[in-house]
Structures are given as structure tokens and as C-alpha cells.
Length: 294
Image (cartoon, rainbow, N blue to C red; front, side, top):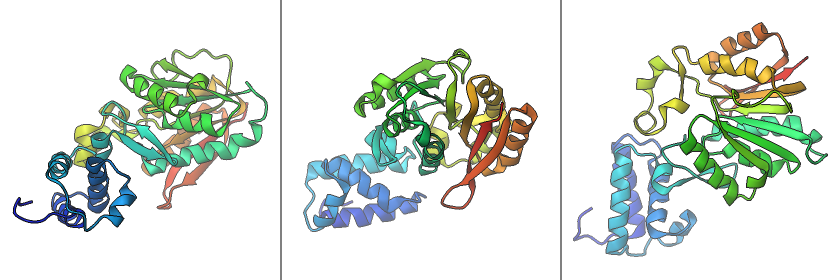
């Protein structure tokens, strides 16, 4: 961006989109719009009616700094401090994963199975294991008004982010946040109608192959499941079986590459049947739903 040229909103977007693409950013246009809206302190849609507006020097300076940091690999969600999930805005920091659209299938799968039971106050207990920013717990509490959620995470910093999001969305009184590894500190009674989780499932050998913005900035603890990717899930399955009701559900986001292994782990446990899968928009298996038979 040279200082002698006239920089309009539209021209800033075009230049920045091309620049970010050269830096290897796949969502270059979207990122440019989100960052410019943040620098301008407006809604992204407002930019479309302001293409001819000349950008002020303070706006260009603020935008330039955001674009520089995005080109360095910092995720947009961390730069603006929030991410939309299930049509809600959630605060995010480098202490938590950036919520992905694929994880919304966990909520949809849970609602399909629990909504008919959400009729008696105080009777629907749900656990969100590895809550991170709290997106699953908050959405469950909002969508199921008679539910009570236990949200766990091994990271106290992540739980602070989740608590803030629960307060923002006015469901904090129905979510208990517990610092623990999976369900280890959660007693076996009362039992849950559902345990949902987006657990770490990346193989250690895949870590270096992840996109730079993920590898360099998102918490490794929330991504890597172990040498084979499924080690955390292997521990979660028996812990869940001991803490859910007969007929209750374990609903997990998984990698399509470990689907068969996770199915085998559930079969070996012997307490889950049926085992169902849900595909994402790319028609890849993304969520596994296992019902406790006994």
C-alpha cells in the first residue's frame, strides 16, 4: 500500500485479498473483509455499501497491522477475538481452539437424540468433555432449556474463556465448569443422558503437516490425541460408559481416518450399541454417536 495512492474501501479489499493469497491464505477475501470490518468497527456487510469511501489514515494503519499479523499466520479469530458458531458469537483466545463449522454436527446430533427428552426440569444432565471455548456446552444449554451441563477441560485458561462465553449467552447458571482430565474428577452419580466431546484426534506424526496458522498458534494439547490419534478417545470411552444412563449417548467428533479404530474400541468395551455416524458437508464421517445399551 503506497501512501500516494487513494485507498478506498473497495481498493483496500482487492489489494489485501491478492496479498493474502500470495501468502498462502485460502480464505483470503473473507479474511480481508473480516479484518477491515474489525479495523473500521463495523459489520462486515456494511463494507459492501462503502466501496467508494476513502479510507482514513488511522483506518489504514489499523488495518495494515491486522493484515501483517494475518500474513504471519495468526488466525483471524484470534486477531478479532471472536468466532461465530451455530449462529452465535464466541470469544476465543490462543488458549482455545478456533471453533470449526464441522463441530456444529456434534450439536445437531445431540439435539436429534435428546430434544424429545427435554421436558422435565432438572432431569437432563449432559457433559461436555474438553469444552475449550465452551461452544458445545453453551449451545446445548440454550437449545435444551431443561438441561444442566458439566463442562470439563484440563486447561484452567480455557475454562475461563468458556465461563465468559456462558455469561455472555446467559446460560452460566446451568453450566458447571470443572478443571479435570476428561471425566476423571466427575463422580459416577448422577448419570448423564449424554456425553459429548470434540477430543484431540490428530496423530503426532501429522502435527508438522497441519496448516501453519493451526500448528503455530492453536493449542497443541487440544489437537494431538497421541501417536495414533485415538489415545484420548480410548480413555474417554470407559469413563463415559461408567457415567451415562442406559440408553444414554456418547457423541464425539472424530477424524474420518480413525473411524474404524474408534468403532473397534467401542465394540471392545461392550457397553455401546448401536454405533451410528454422521457425515459433514463434504460427506466425510465427522461425528460418531454410540448409545449405551446396558
